[in-house]
Image: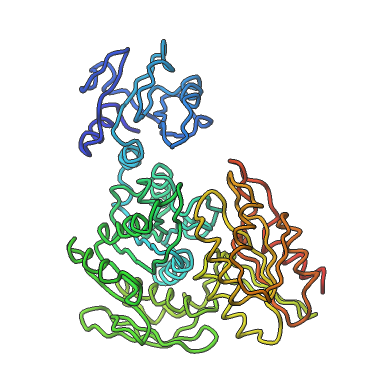
Length: 509
């Protein structure tokens, strides 16, 4: 719980507070009559309101009717960037007016849940690709070392008790949910939290004021550039680079573009710089690729804890060996039980990530969340190597209303590697999926690629099976195990790429 006075004090300390409106009066100081009254709940969802709730008016598309509904259900005050005198006329509701409601929400949530981040060792991963896999690698290693006292937040699933996983809906949760989850993790006895930190997490202040013990920068490529995400690559990179400012130890892939910029920022903010990379780099921790997920790691900085030896991951692709090396670098900063690291990596499975299914008839399918050029091309190269005699049949679409540059990149990857491309729906949001499909098709420049357009995703996957012959490999891109398709502001039920592929493998056996 948090009193009105404590709430305002926290906002003033961050320089976010403008005024409080009580009984039509605009004030800077909290009136004595309400100073000690408590908020028992915070909510930005007008459907989840209890008496003594502080309702948060957030979002670019915020509808004032949500505030009216929240007040009817018992909200006693609102946290807002805009004054709502007309909508609240005649209502005994206080307005806490702030300069930035997203940052204010993070500030109030942190105070409301009692600074739970101070009771956890926080590890954050950012990058265009590989965040989820790296989080899973790291959590599994640390779970071995620290007896499952490790929580996880990822775009696939959340784990707040070291054992049970629930499906996620955002790569990085809204700040209010983030601090609630951290408090729950602490109450469950967790000591560590490994999480993904998206560019939107900084763009929308979801992690505003949050400081990490270790921050990892995996890679960067031109993605998420659209009117609703980042207006330019410079904005995208700047948002991602906030992690190197807000972490005590910063682990960076030595071989990525803009490394020098990120390294300079890390040093400028007084944070420790640690690097990893392949054996072709001059990184502190270097990996040498073997075959089928095997790789070796060696240390080249006597000032850092050493990691050496042979390791293996059960997720194919050189990029996963790189991600695993990043996870090993993290673990080395936290524990000297390096003999247990290999077991953690070996047992790591990531739902929907390069999950290969086979049947007795020789059908092969791979389900993965790949959705841009980098992830698709790496996956395609691996599959072409593993299954050189058959065709590569790809079922894919692209997300709507954002990341428009991906459509060109997906077309490029299909042109370079696919034999058959079945273009279908993805998370369309508010965009016409036919338009998205046409944009991908326009960028498939190899005339030898056989292209089909099947709007219904379930039918598209079934068509892939109808077309496939023993020796071919089918690749279902982008949705993994997710059992929804986002369309017009709603989650439309969907069987899931993995679930449907598993069913069809049995049907075609």
